Image (cartoon, rainbow, N blue to C red; front, side, top):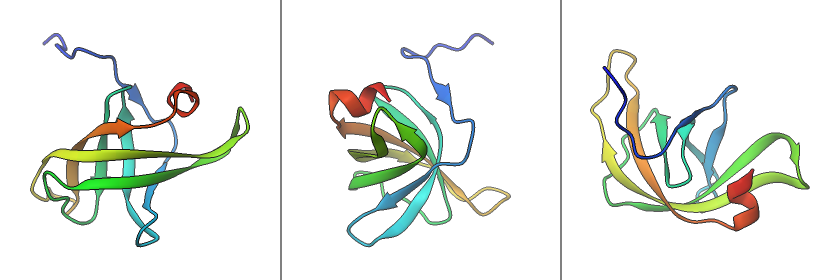
Length: 102
């Protein structure tokens, strides 16, 4: 089957945790990303329509950045699978041009 996505997705090569800075707790792990959204794997359910301000610490400094911050809205979420984890799709609402390029 041929993939019909509008934008190419970049798979994440190493684990990247997304942190909710309001609660200072991990929201989940980034699985893949486009310029408009990303797939998140988390241990807890993500409520559709929820808006988050997120911080993604980088494993190494890139162009002077050691983290990326952005807003995102949950657009879909699945029930727990065999691993008891949740898969969720989030739409990126805001980020700087420099952070988007990272």
